[in-house]
Length: 121
Length: 112
Image (cartoon, rainbow over the protein chains, first blue to last red):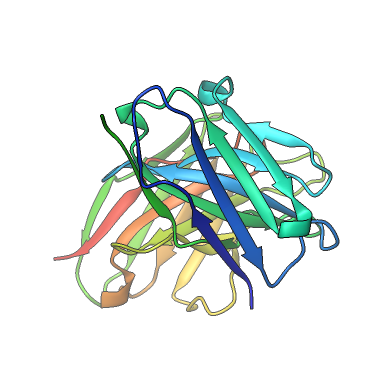
């Protein structure tokens, strides 16, 4: 069974760096040619795609946040990590990870439950 | 970046009636391999989004056949033939053709 689960701090202070981890099961981050994205959603607002890491370790980022984001993975732990620097209250929201099979290129077919992150002093 | 524009943003519907959501992209979503990577997601209140349709018109496993997707190039539509109570929530289109990927603003479907 495919699962993705986000973990990390639920409260961060302005200017701090946020580190979120997506732990996956039911598929492999290297052998199965699977990519993983991070997507966020401010309260009551639309989804915003943030970053993607391919099975090849290539990466892609959203334009507006590219300077603040880093995505990486540890295949031995089945984890994908997102770091976002210089957090601001406008970054408050639910952060999701979701997978994309690269062989068929069907984006975001499975999602995690999300983690709500609040940025406040 | 490709801008995805949905309309309407709010859609009150009567149970059993049809509903239609439009999604337009600022540039063609036809990829160099000939495929069009336009997807539709549904998000119920308090839940994670769930993909309904990929590549314009292919329904995901378990998605009722009252949902259908159509369109080409820059103009796409999601139709629900007969709305049921479980269809309420927000629907998003999303393009997976160009980097960075982008979502529409969402269309909130509610029962009248």
